[in-house]
Length: 231
Image (tube, rainbow, N blue to C red; front, side, top):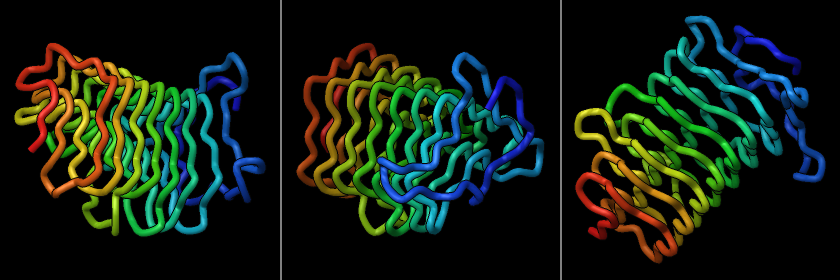
């Protein structure tokens, strides 16, 4: 896609690939600035569900200023969706919401997730499924938590990895949250992250009895209430 601001949303209509060696890719043309910003009336900028899998979103600015709900939602069986070198911003609710059965194995690599949400219940990335990766990203100035791991209406939120990110200035709404919360599931891991000046704290581990959680090699400083809290 060449430079421009495109007033449209892509909801359930990107065809899927067959594997990571044969994905379907939607990408900005090299050196071009591409923004997806739908007009009022859209629920999301990007919505994935059902049989959508092995899709790569590369180099797009996802601007949800006019969307009614989230910037990106992956749900109801969509899986293996990869965002790289992209920006996700200005959602009314979640910057990214991943939820529903069999909605696993998604990746967010070198993304900038910021200025999403209107309350403490809205987060940069809200992940309630398994085997997702968030890495090498900037996650900043979201109203709730920066990265929120919680099973909610999905069967499990296990084996998610949050690594090598810069997570700062989140939780700025009244009662807002920490940089990262690992609140349920088994085998979730957060390491090599820089986490600072978040409203509630740096990393919160607890709430719905998470197990086998690993948190190591993070630099956590200047958060309001705590660095790392284990409930």
